[in-house]
Image 1 (cartoon, rainbow, N blue to C red):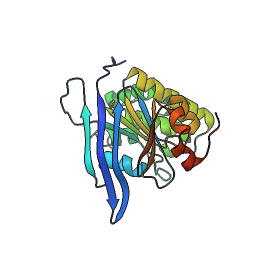
Image 2 (image 1 turned 60 degrees about the vertical axis):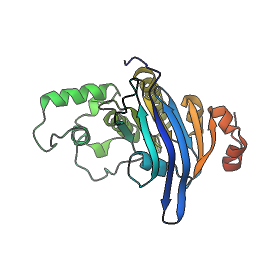
Image 3 (image 1 turned 90 degrees about the horizontal axis):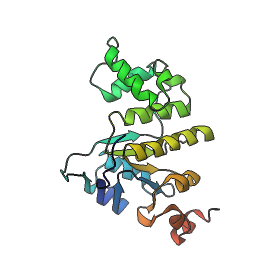
Length: 241
């Protein structure tokens, strides 16, 4: 467990993205605090995935992304990322191979490093996935794959964990396990978590802050406040509860 500092945060300032003449994001400003889960919601085409790609440095953008730690050292931010899906349908790789390829410079085609194998297995245990280490990645269920991807994204533990629709296509039990693990990580490892989601039930239960995005931020605050706002109703209609 990491002691909570309460001072670190990721500051996303005035992010703008355009594709040609099409404006996709405009003046997006978000403070993501450590030990908190910030959920981004919005209709299709609102710019949610584009925002994540901008933060990850995968699309050209203007604006700044700063990480402030306890010492205000201005160090480069470490980001962990769990995508919505992984193209592994025809992959012959094992879970061990995939973890090695994502987290080290040790070539996965070389004989297994016993030390690193045990380190990976111990880290997978944190996510209830240690028994999967020798399994073919393309044989895993959706829930198993997401637990493995979450393990990869937190090896080592990042300053900011980004989740893009992380439980899409996963059954209810798998969703419960995933969100419980995210809650555990943010509480015990002081992780700042930024998540795009359409699962309003889970957003209400687990998010500390909700942002409604439609190219720019149109509403933000506690889940209940955002989901009963005029802007939310105009976008999605009324949500029960």
